[in-house]
Image (cartoon, rainbow, N blue to C red):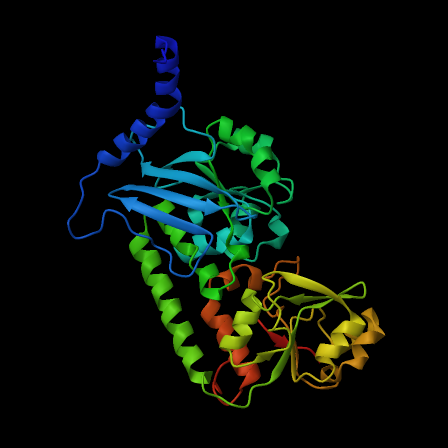
Length: 384
């Protein structure tokens, strides 16, 4: 028979059992209602987040950029006892949050949609922010700029002591760099909506903010309205036979970056009644192709969306190669810069990440103008 020392038993209790018991204790402090399920998944479209609820306690799982691992968050009401000795990759967040460092424009758009911009105390890349309320608060000294989102000033974050840092997760290295924040009691919620392949999946991440602010009824209503509008628009073009061929992306230094056939861009094009030239591709991200390869796909497409240029003159000044695309001789070339600010912000990457229905309406109007004749483009604009 194997003998276990008292010391080993104590270590087992501290390292394994105590965190689990703390979570259960936090969970059991709430009263369960028979009208709501004890456990439910709030996300129908998003693949990189899930949330299980038990009363007022919520456990959120966010998949990392590689999708091989996940980070766990325990959300408990403010005032409840914080679990001790949580295992690595488990973070505790007291809700509702009231002091927020929102480090990308995506989160700012979500927070604005649920009328909680007054909680934002710090951002990154203020020049990229389109939201006028945030810009006003920054000019009044009520919001600080933490520098670039690729290398935010963590010392400033520690000094300002937010309830939470919300940021986009681009790599596992970010988690290692943020250890200094986590070790000092500042949880970091990683938003991974940029890897969602469904437009509604990207929008659905607003539900995560609803959990943090305890405004789930509001975010349920917001998302449901967007979902309904999106699917109604999608139905309008579902049975249209004459679908335009569509090119997406643009060229950088003689390399064209085509969104993959399983990307959210490809899904937008399909749902808007277009035939995407790269739909056969299985990638979810962008694929680099040289211009000769691109001509094999796109020499005679009907519509091009996603050019970075603001005019045909600028386009041809960048490269004369564009002249080989017949679409460049038409009026069917569109960028998504209509709501770009003078300082460099672009609301397509801000509110556009929430308003999938509006982007879909824009694309339907571009591909099939007679279907939505009264629609005015919001994010896209034709380049002359």
